[in-house]
Amino acid sequence: GQVVFCNHSLSGVFIAAALMAGDPQTGVMALLGCSSATSVAYLARLDRQMVSDGLAGYNGALVGCALAVFQPALPFMPPALGALGPFSSGALGDVLLTIVVGGLSAPVAAKLGPMMAPVPQWTVAFNLLALTVLGGFAAGKWYTQPPPKPKPVKLPDSTPKVIKDFSFVYDHPGMFFADLCEAAACGVAQIFVVPDPFAGLLITAGIFCYSPAAAGLTFAGAFLGNLSALALGYSYDQVQEGLWGYNAALSCLAVGIFFVPTGLPFAALAVGGTVMSTFATIGVKTVLDKVDMPCLTVPFCAVASACFLLGGRVPGLVRAKTPHSPEVNLRAYRSP
Image 1 (cartoon, rainbow, N blue to C red):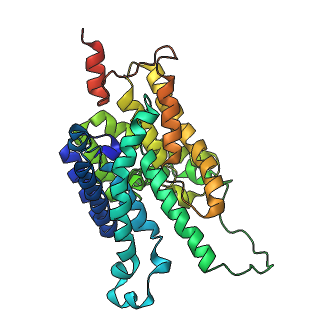
Image 2: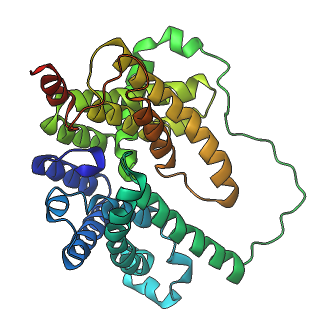
């Protein structure tokens, strides 16, 4: 549950169930990566409280999710393994990668913590390791299997980049709102690289077990992130898949976990961080799309760090002394 800042075992159960329901292969790989990272943390004698709280395993879980979806080792697998079935042929190499790279995430995260202090390390270890692996395999594929030269044929662009006709929104507001809610659920699930609205609802329920306010912030962040992408003219199909919602959801949730909900300044930071996540996603995607790489949660890490550093520098923004749920942060702030 620590991927979404939930130090609650029941939250972890809901999230594991969500991944199994949305994509069993991703669920298995997430558990494998988390187990590998936790085991390495124990063997390396890392801080026991950190391990007990799940802080040693969440980057490994995300590594497993990313490798299950992007499968960087697939082009290098022997063709004979195809007879073993799609899971074996497509994921055998990535299982080994998950064990190794997921295990490495624990010591990497332990080193990053002091280096990034006082800013939390977020999911930087996951991004660093996953992008290194994906980039390395992409370079190896290009070197061993260079792409054919493109033919000089200009095809019309059929991808809708800008929505020019908003009559559907005005004529059917209820249906449009329902679509955005489904997209927000997909955005929550895309935190774990699973584009499934039911999985997103289960994850939201898991967060609700830890904190109802945190669950609301997560879903609202995904909703607003998707709406921002639509307002900027991005593909409705991508919005429906939640690709513009997950970084925004994490940024909004991070504000709720690390700040005291004191009123308008808190709300402004939550909304501003959510919208800025959309712009950060545009920037990161523009760069990484050129090398056929996913942006993962890099935009979230950048925006959440900026939001965190605003604490104590902007009047009315109060960082929580001991970050917890928004409800607990507010009670601790009000107590003498």
